[in-house]
Image (cartoon, rainbow, N blue to C red):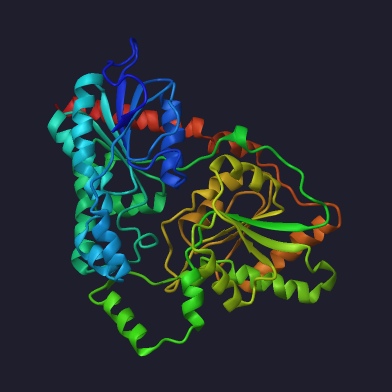
Length: 461
């Protein structure tokens, strides 16, 4: 266990305290970690903030007290099962996720900090969803108001298109309903997901639900020049479709078919996502087709994927399978501090989410949506109908296309390329959006929800 600052001190004089549970936190670069860090940095100007996390820290925070608590995962057992390709056993028996082994150590540390810091409320950031159990247990043990940030819904079909079994789906839905019953406020980042939970919730619990979207920091996103003789289409973040691209064309032997059947045994499928569209495949083919029509643009138009966490050999195989390696470059993860510079200098920003095969609207919205909108660069959003599409529909400089629409992507890239190579790159004034998108506003929204949760607990006690 490691802590920043003096954990034995009570809250700073004149300021109420908050105890925050954020299993994923900076310097980790998951969307949840970035969101929690940005919001709590700002809340620390109003409250005395203490954070419990599992992520090791390399520096001491001046504004917040951060305590690092290790989990008790059976790492050797997990590693052995994965080597034996028995991941299905982990899916079946480790619930709701492997951070369940962090719950008890986190609760023990939190109880000590409650005595030392005397917080006014407990605020939990998820994912992982096990972190919510830390909040529920603390709420029962201490009687403190509880505010849960669920981010995406446990039952969102974009994030959970299938469950290991129907029982696992019922458990997930039951856990989400439990969180709503036990908490004094529950926060989502998607209006679509919030509405779905609200529709099934009892009337007396619906006013607990609140929307606080992801955001971005305006000071990080300043316009930057890009080389005048090339066009860079940029995607920042992980793509999940590499194996789908390989498997789409790779021959399947008998043993592989048996193993695939074993991994899908008992699976409860709620929707089907085409993960091939969560890749540069469609956009890459659109660029190849465009270059065939404009030979003088060859080697001047390229898609660059920043932030790939997958094995480079897997990526290389996927690019070779689809034949797009000539126009697509995939780079390793980059520190979040460098992301703003990358996207502020790109000529076209690319978002893609997996296509929903049945055409139903989705509830997911990409966290990079808000960062992209903080720039003046054109955006090509290849997303399914639903939350992300609806949110971007009225924003300036955004082209919305279906995730598999190669021709539409080609037309957009052609328009951007023609303007850029003619010396008149397209840019868009989104200054009116910057305040709305900023984490300063998001922190104010969160603070209002926390205060409403505290007031709700006081009324009910």
